[in-house]
Image (cartoon, rainbow, N blue to C red; front, side, top):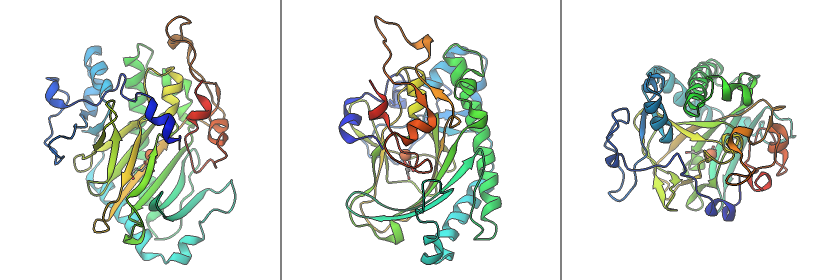
Length: 335
Ligand SMILES: O=C(O)CCC(=O)C(=O)O
Ligand SMILES: [Fe+2]
C-alpha cells in the first residue's frame, strides 16, 4: 500500500473524475438511485455493452467515469456461488485449517491472514488467479466456483483493456500488448469484514491504491468501502446488486504517465453488526513486463516522465512485499 501522505497529495480524479450523475445527461450512464447519504457523491454506473458501441465519443465519456459496471453478462449464479463459496470457506473450515495458509515464504501461492488491530480489521484469503491458478481443496466445490468466476471476470477485464485503448486513440490491443495482459499476474483477495465478526477498531483496510491495470471488486452487501474524491472527500461506495466495481490500478497510471490515476480507497468497519464479503481481483501485467510511461504520453515541456520504469515483479518487490500481497509501491516508482 502507498503511504498516506503521498496518497493525499495526488489528484486521483483526472480524467476519470467521479462526479454526480445529476451533472450529466449521458444516456449510457445509468442514473441509479443509491442509498448514499444525501451529501454523498455518486459513483457512476457504466453499461459494459455501451463501451463497445460505435461512437468514439461515447466510449471516451464512459471511460472517464469508470466506476460500477453493469450489463456485463455474467450470470447471477456466478455471483451467488462465489459468495457462498467464500462464506463456506470462512465458516466451514476451522481456524487451524485456514492457518495452514498463513505466510510461510515469499513464494506462497495462497495466503491467509487475520488482522485485528487499530490499523486493519479483516480476515482474508488470497490466491494467485492467473497465469497459473492455485486454489484450496476445501470446501469441495470451491475450486470450480473460483475457476468459473475468474474466467468470467478476466473476459470483462480484457474487454475493458480494449475499450480503454480505443478511447486513448490506440489500436484495440494496445494496453493488452503493453502490459502483456494475456500472461498477466492476477491475484484475488477474498475479504471478510469484520474478521470473525469482530473488529478492534474502525479501519477495515487502510487507504491505498492497488498495483496493476485495474481491480475488479464484487461484494455481497453494500457498505464499508470508500473512495477518495478529487475534493479529498471520502465517498461511500454503494453499487447495484451484482455490479462490478472497476478501480484503476497503478500500472495504468504509470503507462499513461499519470493521465489515468489509480484510485485511492479504504474500508471502514464501524460496527460489528454487519458482515461483508468482498472479492478484489488485481489484474496485473505479466511479472516480466517492463512498465514505464509510454512515449505517447510524454512531452518534455508539459508532461515530463513522472515514473521510474521497472518490471511488474520489481515493482511488487520494491517495498519488500511478496508477490501474492500485491502491495502498491507508487511512492518508490513516482519521480
Ligand atoms: O473489501 C473491499 O471493499 C476492498 C478490498 C481492497 O481494496 C483490496 O483487497 O485491495
Ligand atoms: Fe484495494
